[in-house]
Length: 61
Image (cartoon, rainbow, N blue to C red; front, side, top):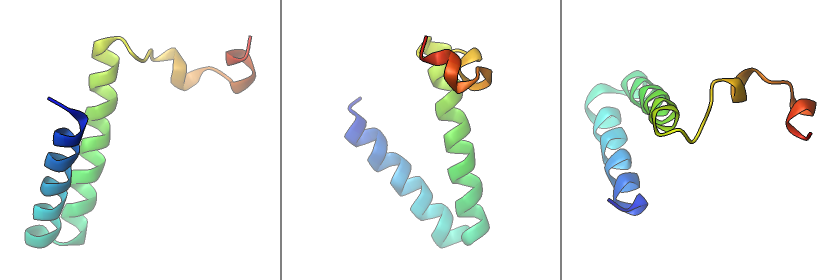
């Protein structure tokens, strides 16, 4: 599935949540989508948990 299709589906989900559930439902769907994105990247191996907890200056080495 292309990234354009994934983006379109995410936008439609946020639109439906905002229209039918209001602003707080929109924020909840957006936050859960972000969490799902990070978990998916972790499971694919693109990210490591250490990337979130490592100091900035250590990455440059």
